[in-house]
Amino acid sequence: MPLQPALTVPPKGDPVKLSAAGCENGRHSAITASKVEIDGIIHATCRHCGCELMRLGASRRWFRTGQMGG
Image (cartoon, rainbow, N blue to C red; front, side, top):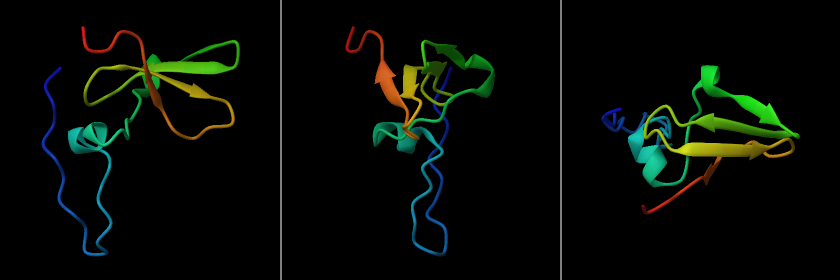
């Protein structure tokens, strides 16, 4: 899956984190159809870079999982 172009900064000055640039900063966005819950941990795939993600029930942030740097 190719990376999508980085979005520009909106007029308010807050950077948009819904692109490949967000992935570079550690802010991933999960594909809704890929979400699977196992023992209270949600697993998914990032829609921009394709990495494996996980999220705990109390957390609102996705974390990278799986093999990295291989």
